[in-house]
Length: 115
Length: 113
Image (tube, rainbow over all chains, first blue to last red; front, side, top):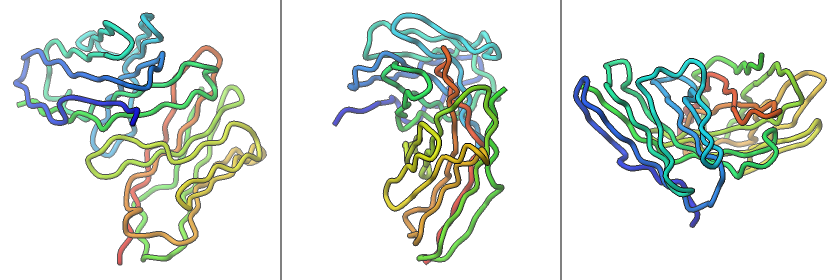
């Protein structure tokens, strides 16, 4: 089945220690997204790629970076995780047609714990 | 700007009860509307969507109708099951050049046997 895969499902890191989360997709979608979801809150968009074009949300901290080396993979790098960065990180993809009707498909998420 | 307002949760129902989760929106353009469901510890799954006024989205016994006149997209199910226990998110996308989804805060549904 075509899908969005996130690894690892659970990640524990130490305060200030860089961490990378991975997302891959077999849908061949043009757009890939990273969301942060804290407990009992709605997902918050951090940034997205349309192909190789990177689009950062205005309020995304500089501590969060992303890489998309090819169509299938996208990485979220947290350079110096703080306690406030503990959250579920969701990757999503979409075909990239008309923005209004473009449907996003989500992966299972990576739960990040910062000690 | 765009915003989505969902009814406050949590919602607790008995199995086979009727479910309504209210969702209203404000949007700068003519949005598409979505309902996503999140089961405990998992990512979001698209439940249904509607892209124009009076469209009805449906899936797994859930329905929602795009009401432009009342700017609403209420989620309904005639008979809920324990397995429907999850958080439900209403969302919209106004389009333009923006791929951003605007989510409501989510409504936690618990269905008891």
